[in-house]
Length: 141
Image (cartoon, rainbow, N blue to C red; front, top):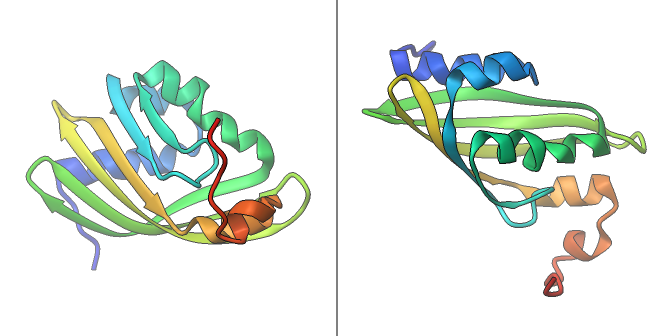
């Protein structure tokens, strides 16, 4: 079943951007916050669209191809929850698929917050992160 609402449509435009910075800037607020699961490449909290684009999205350099496909969309007021999958091919040629849940908050027709959680094990294995793939704790930076 295809779900649609003004909030879901904004999130769908974000996914459809596929890296197009102009589209991303049109749907994500300048002061947005990205909270990315620890263990995901470049996991952490990013404040502001410039940090999201310049710092977090830097993880894409480790991939030849990377896609984010929303499969199920649910909306409750200003919240949109998306279940989906990441697919990609690393720079070394390893194929990867990983499930995710994205929890978006919107205001004024733009995304103001993303809380992301995903299955990081397939990504760690594909990227050759032996310590994370084995489930060992990461050393403090």
